[in-house]
Amino acid sequence: MTYELAYPAPGQPALADQIAKLLNATGLPATIDAHRGFDHGVFIPLKVMFPEADIPIVQLSLRSDLGPNAHIQIGQALRPLRDENVLIIGSGMSFHNMRAYGDSNFSAVSNQFDDYLSQAVASNGPERARLLAGWEQAPGARLCHPIGGEEHLIPLMVAAGAGSDQPGVKIYSERVMQTTISAFRFD
Image (cartoon, rainbow, N blue to C red):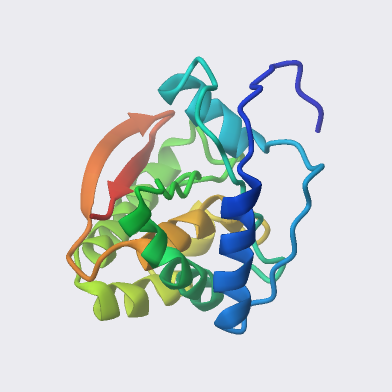
């Protein structure tokens, strides 16, 4: 998809190399593509957070299998970067079913799934990883993220893996078109 919005933030090749080395060292194959533009999941939130585009950005792609365990492991591999003041953002959505937006039949389902995510995030590291890895068994999971739609949830797995073993916190929750949308933070 092509966008007309510009977000001319610089990259950071040295950090990209460091990330690739961290991932490859843990058995997670990583390559660098210096020519790919920013995904809307990167530039939209950063355009709000840093409108001057004056921070270096390294974008990571999701694995094509969208497996939660591998993405939690990616986050765990990136965890040392936090000590270097690298901000790790998992941009996505806690609910993403385009056909369900505005349909009141999905209100209860989105609440149940949001409750599951909130409980998972508020757990300590190992329990959080277990619960998030099993997200498909959560109440209403596939109604909230149909097959192919989980790409909007999987960035949460990376952020959770990169977080400390302390419980995460819900920092935002709102009703959007009769569904619950939440955001989480990991210290």
